[in-house]
Structures are given as C-alpha cells and as structure tokens.
Image (cartoon, rainbow, N blue to C red; front, side):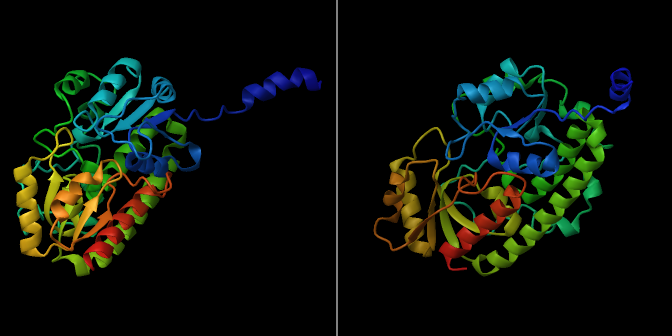
Length: 340
C-alpha cells in the first residue's frame, strides 16, 4: 500500500519555486539584488573586489556563471564595455536589465573641467530626498518591461561596440552612487524577479520594501555625518562620485583623472595643485583600483591630507546589507578626512 500510494503523494505535493540564477556586474548592484532576493538565493558578481569594471576581463568561472544566468542586472556598456560584449554573446538567452537604460534612472552629464564648479553641484537632488518623493513615481505601470529591454539584449551589442576604450560618454556612468537611483532600482529588481519566479513575488516585494527602509535610514545617517563637511573642498582621484556629491550637497574641487583611459596632462596636474593650495583643500582621496602615484604631483608643496575612497566598496562584506553600509562608509570616509 505504501509503495502504490507514494507516486500519488508526490504528484499532490507542490513543486518548489524555481528561483532564477541571477548575476550582477559590480558589488553595489549585487548588494541591491541580494537584498531583494533575501534567503531565496544569492546573486553572483562578475567584477571581483579590488578590480575595475572599466577593463575587467572575465575569468573562466565568471564567464560560466554568466552563461548559466537566467537574469542579469548590470550598470551598462558605458561602464563596462567588455562585459557588455560578453553579455551579448554568452548570455543571449538571459533576461538582461541594463540599469542605465531604465526610465527611473537619473543621469548627470560627464564633467570635463579641470576645476569643478563648487556650489553648482546640487543638480536639483538636494530638494528631493526619499521622504520628499513618493516611490509610486517609480510605478512600473508607467514604464513597462518592454521599455526596459528586459527580454533579451537587443540593441545592447551595438552600444557596447561603440564604447571604445574607457572614456565616459556624455552621461556619467557611475549612476549607482545615487541613493535615489538605488531606491528606484529596488522596485525594478523585485518586479523582474517576480516575473521570472511568480511563486515568490510577495517575498520579493516585501524584501524590496525592507531594503528601501534600510536605505532611507542609511541616507539619513549619511546626511547627519556629512553636515559638518558641507563647505569643505576636496579632490578625488577619478571623477566617479558626482552622483554622491549631488545627493549630499558636497563640494569637490576637482579630479586627478577625468577619464579612466588616459593619465592627466602636466597642465591639468599643475592647475589642480594650484587650486588645492589656493583653496586650502582639506583632503585628496586615492582609490584602490588605481595607481596612487599621481597624487604626489598634486600634494607637492602642501600639507593636504590623503585618504582612500572607493566607489565600489571593495572592503565591505557583500550581500543584502551591502548598499546601506556602502553609503555609510563613503560618508564616514569623506567626513573623517575633511574634518567633518
């Protein structure tokens, strides 16, 4: 009796939900996706800690994870052209979400000045923190997934092929440093996962709400931490932080490197060194992804402090709590070096 009843019992048991194999490009995106997936799964990440997304070549294990992916969340080809080409060839069957292409993503223009215009860096962001805009503005009824190119990768290959070298295009690709963008992406991530795994849709939605609350708390804490640093001037190694600057009203004097493809000219370094001396800049930030030797060219003749700032959060623990910790870490480092 037991033997004959077992097949019927198995047929009556609901099958476990199939959680999609999910891959991301960089740690901040992996953290956002992990916060929505929660205990249901752990998304992979293609760019390891300490590597630069601009020129990272995928290891065989990373290429295999991309090949096996059902969902891919990534910033876009302006940040990682080589990864874009790989997505187009070995992950052609996956649903690909290019975050820079989403209608909810806010963009800032790439800067090409040696000395940035301090005081002209709020770009309208200061007037709308998370409490000031209803997240219903990100309602996906207003921008369905066809607009997001979630189904497949059509059109992305050509875009990636146009991104020669690592020069940034007319729009700054470091969009993940905007907390507003991160908050909007949580909704898109939850909806995309729900489409692939409808049985867990309620869990994804609840996790996204929890992640948004944690992000809001981190932003509020960062505002408090950075309040004393509002008038401080500092220099960054490469111009990858203006979304963070805009979100928190910071005044960056300039960047040693405007492009990841080329070193700055002697005239650029001279102008920046003169500005550091003239303004009494409080700090110059190095980055773990780049050779810091150029910093000596700017600090020569001054007593400006040097610290490290990382737009990828390479020292932080990956996983669901990454992004709030990332925002807090950036704020702590800036405030600590500028005397805030």
